Amino acid sequence: MPLPPHTDIELAELIKSIRAAGYLKSASVEKALRAVPRHLFVPKQLTAMAYRDCPLSIGHGQTISQPSTVVAMTEALQPKRGQKILEVGAGSGWQAGLLGHIVGPKGMVWTIERIIELVKMAKHNLKAAGIKNVHVIHGDGSMGLPNHAPFDRIIVTAACPKIPPLLTTQLKPKGRMVIPVGDLYLQKMILLVRKSKDGFEQTELGNFMFVPLIGRYGFKPV
Ligand code: SAM
Image (cartoon, rainbow, N blue to C red; front, side):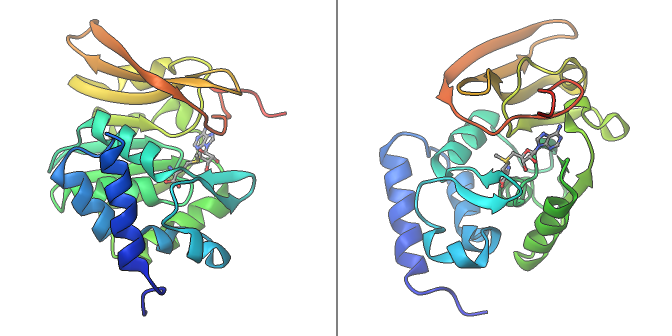
């Protein structure tokens, strides 16, 4: 399929601005941004806006996150080749696709989504982008994915009232979790590092705004 006009220029500008803002640091994340094109993960009518640094509607009241936020979270997560990663909140599949590219063919990403239409959309988008090592699963990600645990990395891309307890138990020793925690209006991005079986180190990475995590250990549906 031909690229939408000016894609290369717009992507280069976006990468430059996210780097200048201090979010983009590593070569692996930059390579993933180039290899997993965001325009394949936004609704067709929004293709022209795919390389703007803003969240976009993907339908069903949900969004594909802002590129600088996705980069900030991915850098904090420090994904490595060959790792097993869990994402909660597949949405469009873009974040999972970037992680799939970084972990490579020997790694694996599982991403959970509660809205079945978005599960189908994420699968379709990932296939279009040629990503083969991401499994999109329908369910309540606030309970994690015990059948495939433990994970090297866990990333939650929806706002949580508190850190879901089952997610921490599914993190490997030395594992890292990045998760926005707060109320429905504003959240603090938390980096959680598992130092030992019961020892976790918690760092705050600033304020963000996400759509809510709805589920057993999330917010209740309205
Ligand atoms: N990571 C996504 C991307 O790259 O497009 C964006 C995620 S969007 C900001 C948050 C997603 O979390 C929504 O698609 C929403 O339906 C989903 N979600 C909310 N609660 C969930 C839950 N308990 N389990 C799984 N997904 C959930």
